[in-house]
Length: 287
Image (cartoon, rainbow, N blue to C red; front, side, top):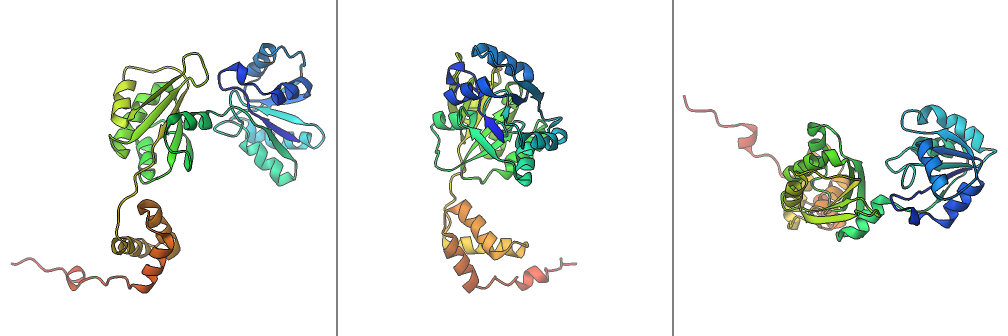
């Protein structure tokens, strides 16, 4: 069996009873950094000394098959340095391989930086998306943010402290200076800080330099106010560009708040406007 175990994201007091029990009895641990695991065992006063196997981003694909075979006979406890394995941490490829091989995968729930940041942000929590780390390079980061410009769900990102200012500046430029943003720093630790403001305000704040582990929570895009006629026109435009009618209606609905079924049915019954003769045969310039 593969057992994914969440570890504290900062405060050791957040360790769960189930994790302590598992660490005390397991014979094999696959961990992102075995040194961190040794430190955790010592900090919790656990005398058990299981076999430690290094499982990180650079070797996971190569070790997955071996670990899956081992897990057929032996329970393997999988740890990341902090939080839940597989969430922007090693573990996904192992779980994927285990699932395909029919090996049981379970989890010991616990601390999560994503959910903690979302909960304290003050932004809507009913629908959200986790986007992991933003790209390191400016051009790729701007491109990723542009793709999210119309996303209406609250967005959660991880970010390096040294790139925070640059990322907030790019966020301001792509999503708008007034977009609501929350930066959560050092969650659950002694110097925990939750900074709320607009993208412009937080970009200016971060310019002086920020330290620690960072989560960024960003408000979703406000719904555009469209009448049905305009919405149908946008659906027709997407279909003309190659999208399926059902998908086009869903996309316009998500961005505007208009009903998906209303858009779909209206687009079916209303013909796509034919291009004007002027569009087909542009007027030649006078000579």
